[in-house]
Amino acid sequence: GDSVTQMEGPVTLSEEAFLTINCTYTATGYPSLFWYVQYPGEGLQLLLKATKADDKGSNKGFEATYRKETTSFHLEKGSVQVSDSAVYFCALRHPPNAGKSTFGDGTTLTVKP
Amino acid sequence: SQTIHQWPATLVQPVGSPLSLECTVEGTSNPNLYWYRQAAGRGLQLLFYSVGIGQISSEVPQNLSASRPQDRQFILSSKKLLLSDSGFYLCAWSLDSGANVLTFGAGSRLTVL
Image 1: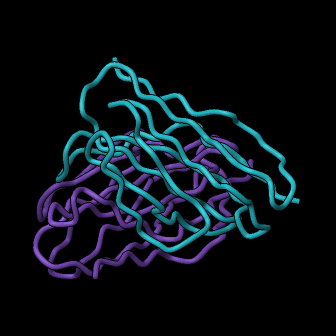
Image 2: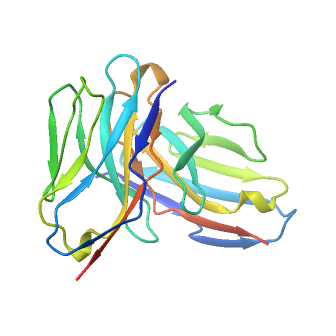
């Protein structure tokens, strides 16, 4: 079945540092890929998505590129801020599964001033 | 615009007591609806999903049940709570499948004592 493997956390960075959170997936066919973010005490919200190979999703300075050859969708940001502290989830969605999404375990990011 | 409401936000219940968590979606028709559970420090586990009124699919055997009495209402229930039912419960909706994103509610934190 489908699966998503995320870089284990927690990740602690200083403000303005470069961020990479690795995500790889296993799925047949051509899933859509997503990054969701969860701020403390809240539900998840979409950060960015990509629907086909070589697509780049971007939002709020975050980027991720759909790499089918390496089955990866790594999240990057050039300069993190304290307000980026949150839990980040990589996910895929596969139409044959009735729209069900498969999530990674989440990576906790803490940015210190 | 579409909104999703989930309540109660916080719940403390004794072992063996019943449970009812409610979720409603506004501003859309015939959404796919989902219940996820997030245990402390863990990823998301899909519990139930529904593609229409009265249509419920269970992902894992457990002490919980779900119902969809109306198009935009999704209820998570239990007759007798267990300690292991503690967690953060998230309702979500999406339109159909494929690249459509999940939109999450704010979550309900359940503590079973």
